[in-house]
Amino acid sequence: MSIVVAFSGGLDTSFCVPYLKEEHHVPIYTVTVNTGGMSEEECAAVEARAYELGSAGHHLVDARAALFERSIQYLIKGNVLRGDLYPLCVGPDRVVQAEALIAKTKEIGATTVAHGSTGAGNDQIRFDVALNVLGDDLTILTPIRDNNLSREETTAWLKKRGFAVSASTTTYSINTGLWGTTVGGQETLSTEQPLPDSAWPTVAPTGAPEEASQLKIGFEEGIPVSIDGSALSAVALIEQLNSIGEEHAIGRAIHVGDTILGIKGRVGFQAPAAAILIPAHRELEKIVLSRWQQYHKSQLGDFYGMMLHEAQYFDPALRDIEALFESSQQTVTGEVTLSLYKGGVHIEGASSPYSLFDVNVATYGEANELWDGRDARGFARILGVQSLLTHRVRKSVGKANNQS
Image 1 (cartoon, rainbow, N blue to C red):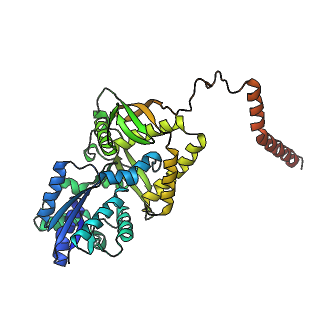
Image 2 (image 1 turned 90 degrees about the vertical axis):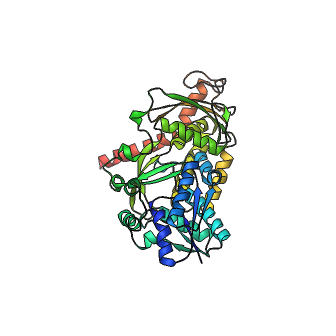
Image 3 (image 1 turned 135 degrees about the horizontal axis):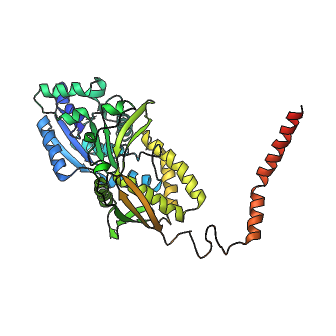
């Protein structure tokens, strides 16, 4: 028998390795699934930490491309922002991470997996749902949740056994992925206080450059494919935008919303690439999609984001919505120019060979070739017929009530 731990190298998963080894007296294997935000040096440090804690074998899986294909591309195509603000930074990662964890667990020959989620957050549900759906023959252990342990308690347990614990990991919980970074700490347990600058992984807007940076993002059928004319893979493009955006403090905010378990939650996040790509993509859609395409996509984007957030990735409704997103993106090809300045993303213009903004046919507020003044007068009269009839009826009813 052996146990496979989903290992990030943070406080919670660091606790799981020696604790499970001590409790179950079996080999503990660790699996780190890189869904973004990890340099080669950080991957090496996580591996060293795993062996220091007693891992019998450590495995690293690069799942960045899989994350883009499974989730991020649809978050872009659907312009998905939870609460009109939060781009679902790390929640979608859990499905991809669970899938990779199960694959490695079967390769190792284990039948038990463990993760370091607590009993209060969303990730415990996302992991459990994904693990139950994809690996329903596996036993799932969650020692921190099951023992209701605080960060202070797990820190003390590790220190008592001679394992070093960084003070920052005890104070703040930081999760990094391709689509952004989340930060939780004492300040996010209530709604009054902002996170201090020291809690954020990158520069504050006040420390950003005094000069704005201009970018031109190219899209092909809704997928970002280039920066300033240079073609890049989806993963490389997002990573480059994260790097550029971090320099200008782009995409930093605090989100308040409803958790899967029904309570309110608050989390800080910084998602530079998302903060750049979603507005750019939306702007391109404005010139190539019809009004009703945009309207229905907006409704479905909200629903898609809610379902993804609520650990419902495997519901077939999401595949149906993804199919609609795909269909809607056939003409979402072109370039969007924007500038970055001290935390702000400013759209400057967009162009597309499929643009419906045809100045040769009509100019808003000026001249056109599709109709004349008589057509416009008749259109306005017909468009207002139902409102006119409603107004007359209610006016008549009002007079009758006043006379009585």
